[in-house]
Amino acid sequence: MAIQAKQHQQTGDNASPPTTSSPEPLTDGSQAVDESSDVDGDFAQLQKTLSQKRRAAKDSHETRLQQAIPFPFLPNIRPLTISDAPSCVQLENASFPNPDHRASPEKFQYRLTTCPELSLGVFCTVIPSQAKGWKVETLSTARPVETDRADGAVSVLLAHIVSTRGKGKVVTDADMDYPKDWRARQGKPAEVGHQEEGRLVALHSLAVLPGLQGCGIGQMIMKAYLQQVKNHGLGEGVGLICQDFLVGYYERFGFKNLGPSKAQFGGGGWNDMVSFLLG
Image (cartoon, rainbow, N blue to C red; front, side, top):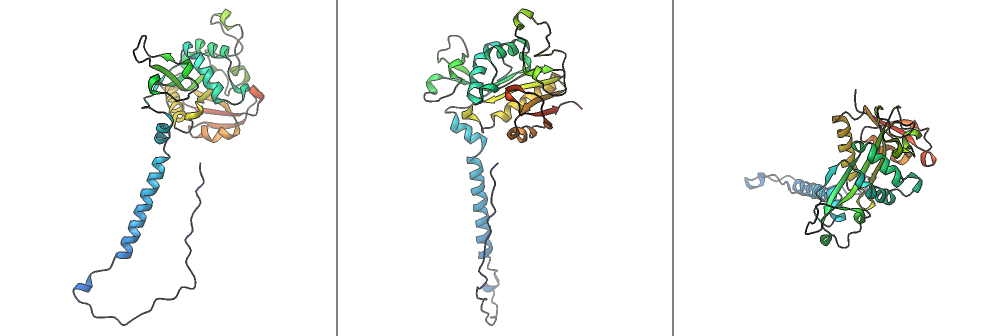
């Protein structure tokens, strides 16, 4: 979102006019057109274009990702499970500065037990010996890729989306909540939390590790998630609440801003955003 300032080339108003001389007769050799100025201009434009491409490549998502991760990035995108809950907690603690905006460990356990199909995670395989000095908040909670694997490779959570389903047209405080006695209910419906018969997917959390933000991972998981919801008929739309500075970000994925939200979760001040996937 950098604002590029236009550069204006100025010429002197008092430049002396070019002198003229009598034309000389042309010989066969002098009939060749002198295009040196055009060539210089074309060369300068080419250099400018190449320079712009180099700057764009240097600032690309791929380049920033290579700088952030000291090994080849081979993402594994899959639904989350209850065993991923500790990593989800670590991810939100690192990504959300305001503690009131984070889900509690119990709420993660509820959501990933009740409706894990409405979640998605981006993981990468990390071999500890190749990641020395790489500081990532979810490494400590990463699980082994395979039991007794010789290199000790683990699957590290880099980003996640966690959702439930609601019956309204927008996300409400009831959607953001969860039944405190959910374990004893054993799947029986409650007034708050996941509504199995609802048709609006209530997206509660899109989180990306701070060190990887701006590398395109948020865009990757959001596009994959919306496609997953649509392809599997998980809902007729996806709703969320976000603060003012993120409205433009979600609009890029097709979300519509429906105005200020009535939800008071985390102190309020939200906007209702909905992406209608059907119709």
